[in-house]
Image 1 (cartoon, helix red, strand yellow):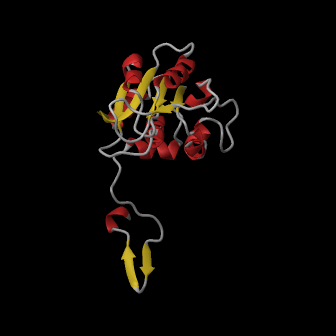
Image 2: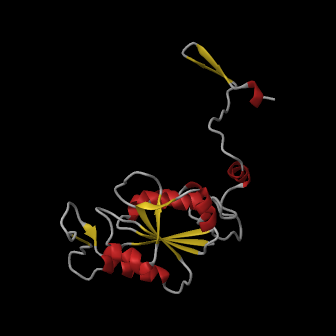
Image 3: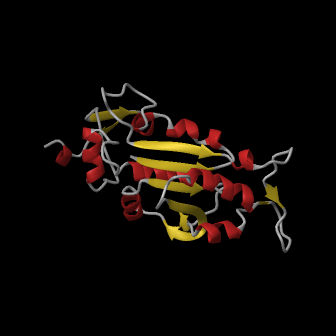
Length: 207
């Protein structure tokens, strides 16, 4: 089993997706689990606000050197990661950043062999750079664009990695995962009539 630990200020924004369909079944949270079937993956959330002792639970501060927006302060993040790593040796720590290593299928396969992965989701103008330095976390990017937070990259990574965890996909889904995905696919009906025109499935797929 692989355990994903997500450090995020907004667990409610991604928990429903991770608890439904294939990923939900892999955790035993959706569908009817088979008798004696054990979870294939586990997902835990850690909210940095829970590690702040001040009254207002503030976790962001103005950046040194000026500039717009706010930056997530390091202590709460580090404490959250510390709790996630408790009793776990060799966990992979990932810090989402636009200048990180491009996430791809090869990386997904490599991560699927891990037992524990900590995913640090930034917000606002980012996380204090000392967090990545202290944790020696791997900087990963899911694409050449900027998002409002690291939650969507975390979901993307978990979804892609989980597909390579034995038992997560069903029999038919496993066959689909093992082939090179076609850019175009077809299903029934063989002939689709739409607004007076007929659109047919290519004959090569009917043989």
